[in-house]
Image 1 (tube, rainbow, N blue to C red):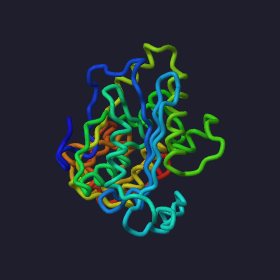
Image 2 (image 1 turned 30 degrees about the vertical axis):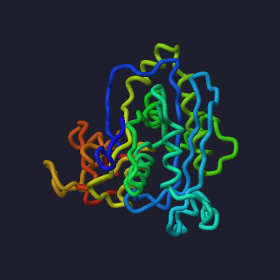
Image 3 (image 1 turned 90 degrees about the horizontal axis):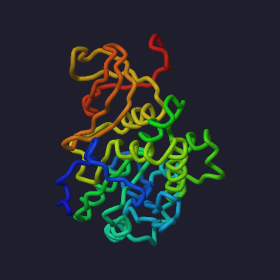
Image 4 (image 1 turned 45 degrees about the vertical axis):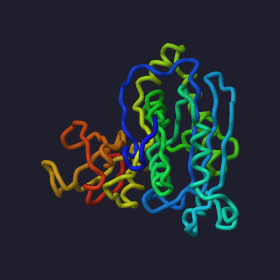
Length: 297
């Protein structure tokens, strides 16, 4: 089933559906490199995916540089080292996206990405620009699996987490390199679990996302960067929120999950004031800063 561009959310959150993963499931880890943090304004400059089964057998690889049809900012180049010259002769996303969708086709295929909503958002926006109808595809966030299996790590960023477990040899921050690291971390998590029933039970109870339409509510890029960093590292944030009982006053939270509903990004966070878990709309966070992990800091 295909959707019209813009019909679905950028990261539909599908919690606790009927079990769908078994030992015949095919997994695809995918990653994008981009011109920046804003999916609404930025472009994909590289997309890669690695397809494998639960034995670890590699079934296929997909990796393409993408001509973003705009200059790559120096800050983005400093991260992934993809230059304007490297993508000048590459195809635009309108020609690459259908090939990517063909690569991930299959009723028994499940996708995995690190910080999945970031990549989902960019793919969604590229699809809308291309007027390309995206299929519904089940996507898991590797960060959630890692947190389930290894709670309390000092960081959940991809490369630092993989270094903790000795999964990194040499690492170039490129789409295929990151897709390989996600696969390694995925299997490292599974191998920590006692048996296949436990592994399949955890996988089938992760939150599920899907491709969809663009974010309708604008989120400041700097705020998003701070929140994503806290989500991966478990750091405390001090926010001023335009709503709730503490409207306009500083409150401290620890983000635990990001999701999209009706085109609007939310975070779930442990509020250190109320001692409860709360949801916050990202576009209603007026100010945000990371603080030391000390409630009195």
